Length: 357
Ligand code: SAM
Ligand code: DTB
Ligand code: SF4
Image 1: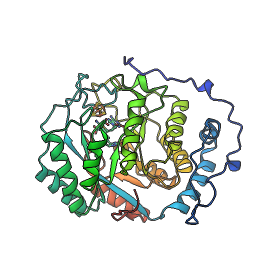
Image 2: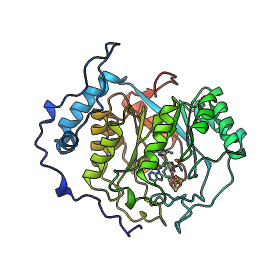
Image 3: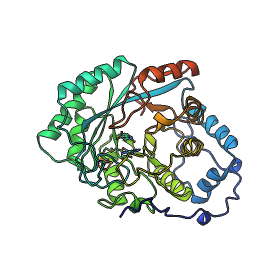
Image 4: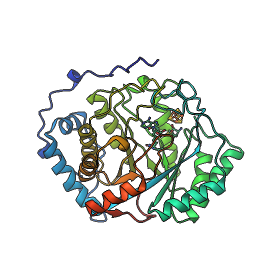
């Protein structure tokens, strides 16, 4: 399945001539009943290609203007991760150090105890986080003790005054309902890339499996957190395809994590070159234009990003970061470094909100 280096599903030449002038694109739809502009879910591929082809500063100007209409300029959401069940995953995602299929897989460890999760959540809150996202290296949720404990973790994190989010793979309606009843704020489930590139990334599940899970989450009234990974060897057309899929869902995800591939040694993508930070900034700016109200997270990949790169990404429309020494298995800039950066930029942590993502 995985080539040494995944082949791009599209050649750059398959992009149509991006002759659209982005200043002529409607940013948002008509005003809704509350007087706020409605966000668009009718993006065309040509429009998105034009955004990708635009001069970067013009694109950032546009993204920034939209950002300021929909979000506070001075706030960044701090989301802390906890890997509640690490390693041994039966899926073969080519980027993931937790897949049991790869030589470089991390050791599988038992599920965290609820008490340890509560303690980690308290520490995260004390450090300024407002969201606490618990990840499990599962293909799907199975009913039983392990899931019962996750339901308890959600209730515990909520009781600690944080927005609980989980990412547990595929799940059934009755399972998302239990999580919702326990106080789940959001469910993370990433599309990772375009439909066309997906088979270069994973073959143990399909793109439609991912979309069906997102629909199950949405139907239960839980907020959707869905994004992808950039820098997996995909072409620009695949980045267009990822954002087009997300932004033409009947309702945009409330939260969109945009990960820069962490090339983990021993995974099929371990030797890929790092994504150019300006390419990440461009994806963020396009995502901001297309999904004005979403919380856009500068997700994995900041450990090798300069402060300047991070600052430009936040200016171009990102308004959330993963916050803590570690992502799931790999390093992240620590809280001290991130707080120092936010101070330099005059930004402050976003408080917990029940109303927004
Ligand atoms: N097993 C569940 C699933 O895949 O839905 C949840 C955990 S999984 C680790 C969560 C997400 O982390 C993946 O969907 C992927 O987008 C992201 N991710 C995993 N490894 C990554 C890496 N090396 N670099 C960037 N993002 C990564
Ligand atoms: C998301 O989009 N990225 C996070 C979170 N959601 C679960 C995970 C990033 C993992 C990066 C690689 C690692 O640390 O294992
Ligand atoms: Fe498993 Fe999730 Fe890693 Fe894929 S990304 S191997 S599903 S933990």
